[in-house]
Length: 87
Figure 1 (tube, rainbow, N blue to C red):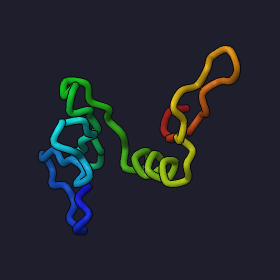
Figure 2: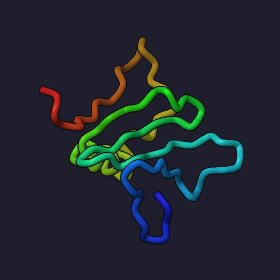
Figure 3: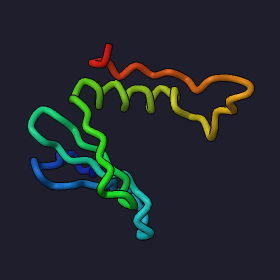
Figure 4: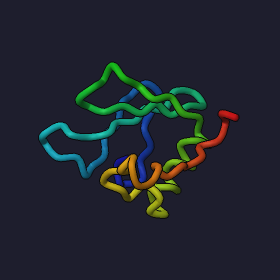
């Protein structure tokens, strides 16, 4: 997540260099073949993704597929982004 080309090491939580001092950030941790993701405000809630799922998630962000503030349930469903690996 650092923009200097470095990669997170196994066991170390890394946060984006764009994160502010307020602690509102997403952190990642490489654990074997998986990428763990958590919100710094909720470190007990960890999302575990395969590297393929993590790559798909990053591509969806880069492609603007997740550029929504909210999805009104009455008008349209939330967009579906397939991260693979689950059905």
